[in-house]
Structures are given as structure tokens and as C-alpha cells.
Amino acid sequence: MDKKLTESKEMYLKAICHLSQTEGSTRSVNIADYLSVSKPSVSHAISILSQDGLINKDVFNRISLTSKGRQNALKVIKKYDVLLYVLVNIIGVDMSVAKTDAGRLEHIVSDETIEKLAERYGLQKLCFENY
Image 1 (cartoon, rainbow, N blue to C red):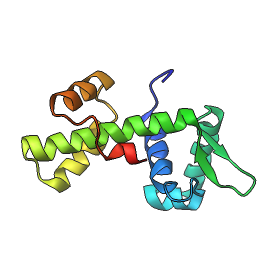
Image 2: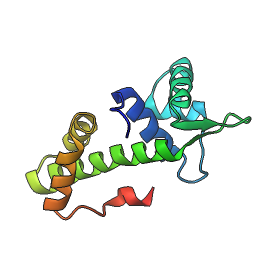
Image 3: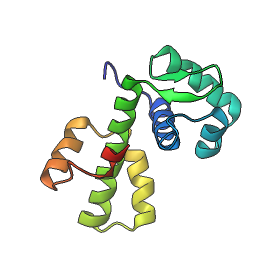
Image 4: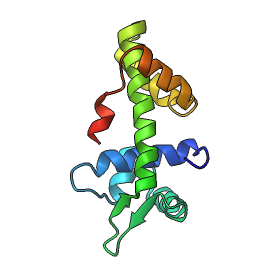
């Protein structure tokens, strides 16, 4: 990654990645529903993500990740997955609490910390590789 993405950009990339798993693309309305945000908010975010070279939007308004966008989305998903695993299976945090905490922590924990946790607990091949 060239520079640290904002939490908002990371959330949108992660949402697009999840929503486009089956068809390879998604639409603004799906993103708005998934993130529980307004359609104008999605429109603004899509414009910024497009300018940053992280997504593509075709003539049918289908949104897909660029290679760079996918790389960034997978990095965030990996952080979430590793944190969730550690919180639930190593520390013993309740799943509902762990999901909330992992969702918050994924935006602030460093790549180095995630790599060390993944290495320490043998988590290099979690489900994020299925995206």
C-alpha cells in the first residue's frame, strides 16, 4: 500500500469485497444496505475510491475492486480474521464482543502486529484467502 487508508475507505473496500464475491461486482444500493449508510454517502465514497484507483465503476453502475483495491480489502479482512480468532480462541472473548472489537481494532493495529500474531498462532491461511 502506498499510504494508510482511512477507516472509512477500508470499510467500503471490505464491503465491496464481501458483496462482490459471487458476481465479481456489486451496486451502490447493496453497499448502502450492507454498511447501513445513505446512498449519497456511498456515492461520495465511490467517487473518492475511484479517484484513488481502488475501484472501477462500469456503464451499468456495477462496482468492482481494482487489483490495488482488492489487495487493500484483503489486508483489512486478514486483520479482522486474525484478531477475531485470537480474541475468541486464544483469549476467550465472547463471539459477539469479539466481532465488535475486531471490527474496531482492524483499523488501528499495524500490519507487523497482525503478521506476528498470524505467525505465532499459525493463522497464515485463514478464510481471507477465499476472497
